[in-house]
Length: 124
Figure 1 (cartoon, rainbow, N blue to C red):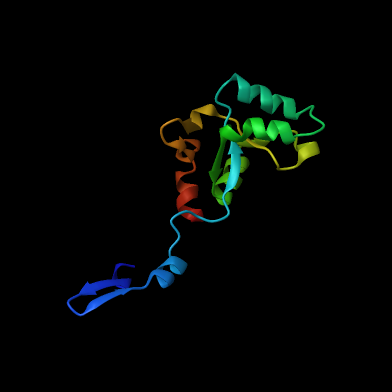
Figure 2 (tube, rainbow, N blue to C red):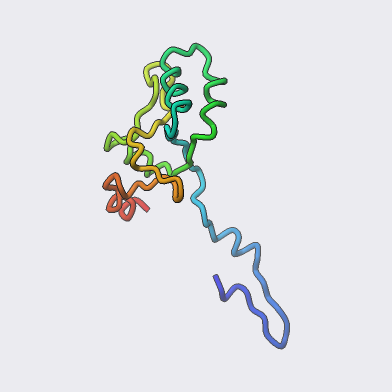
């Protein structure tokens, strides 16, 4: 990437478009996971089981959502670390982190704690 940005005595050559198309810092297509961090979020997730309409609950849960790569969420589901609230009615709309120990307020979701360090290296 660095060679696409040149500056010397003869002028500059910055290939912004080419670099922008080739480089992605954050993986596209992230998916949400709800992290229950307090009683309000726990109550909102419990309410999903009985709610006929989920729009209001989805808005209440918005501050508790983290975005992660789809492959990591699939692995967390496979290992039972993420489940779907009211899956029989709502499908995979509300993915919920089961272990609060996997979330750190300073760094976010730490899937390595779920034993996914090897999975992370193999799926990316």
